[in-house]
Image 1 (tube, rainbow, N blue to C red):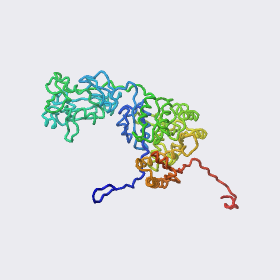
Image 2: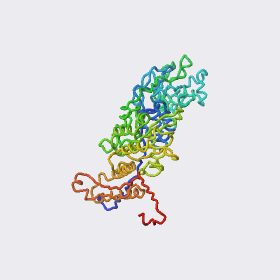
Image 3: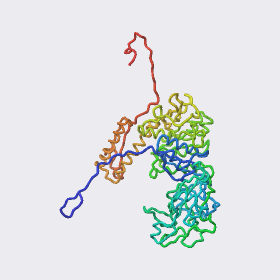
Image 4: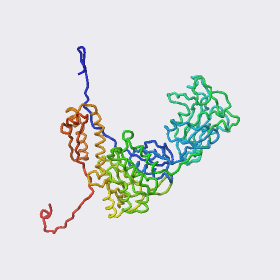
Length: 579
């Protein structure tokens, strides 16, 4: 009771309603090479169209990374993507009425905000890559609006001439407005050369200009926040060629009469032009790819659960898989709330095509209940390039796990005829025999098979753990990820409370209903929660610790069926021969 110095009524509340929360455990993650998009930055995509919108369409170099992500999205709708680029990747640029003879290295928005940009560069493609060379950017102000030799694109796309914005006029300024258009000059974005991708009307030269809704109207901020294709480079380039008197672009609005794009040459009344010098860079290395995956290493920073290995960096790359296997597990630096999904190398799956090759690669990845390995690549159709090609299936396997959580629960097996059907596949890279499947399954490699009438199926639900235990099955590992993650979140409410009977009873009363619910949903067959003086001894209490022991009997999936058919004589009673 709070101390009171005079008579009165004091009211306090004690919250005993803490419960174990539901947690999301079907968040996918992948790193790889893409044609476009932010570099070394985690970006969430929800559909294949969204993937194309942010990271561009696949080409011959990026196809397996793109389709590993897209294949996952065919089953689920929550994927975090990190783009990785090779050495020498550059953003396209354009100078003031002439292309700046060099590209820029701007990887993402944070990099743009903290980088001193090169002088003489007026616009910079938003992200590295040769795709930016297809862009053309043009900007006009009031000076050239009436010049019919240069204003046709603007007249066709804007209602009126740029002039003075209300906000700048109220501050005693004038002549701050511009119109900007971004064009797909070569048609690499849309297939339609000359197509206008974006247009920005009445943006301002004033660094502190505001729109009526209070957001910034300064051209640099507008392009940074709203354009999918370009950044503003050196703002002084907007008026460097001007012969008009007034305030240079990029200055505050108060009392400023801004210079217009004035020149003795009519064409110079419209700034910008075709972008160039964008470069995809060298092929990415395993080290660079691992750096991309390292952005998923810390659970407190990013919540991911299904990490997709993709194709690696070449046909024999196992170093990336080894790194990913070390990223998850029970180690001090590993995250224990995620699983990694790997495929055999391209050489194993498409060239060699033997169980022995698969098991050799699996041995390289080690034994871990947090890793899942499949056994093939799939032959599929790429509608963006109108070609057929082979793609690893770890995106599909992770997708099946995510879809199973949506349709059933995380602790159901993703394999078999009910939940293991593979989408968007022409054929498997190889069809293992029963002997091959036996060999691989003993080494914890999950076979994929083609079944008449059912299509291609995931025909195994093992983790990469070799030691026989409950955790050598995907559904059990997923069950414990859900339990550990949810109960750990709920247990944080016990931090800094007293380790007494009241707190321990509160913990038991919080966890028991949650486990009973999981039991009712067929995830566990039985459980027991112990949190009392038997495991919270005097020494535990004196060292500021708290112990809760949770005993679980996980439900098991059926992997082996024995059917016995027995023929009997007509005059024999079944009770005589059968139990």
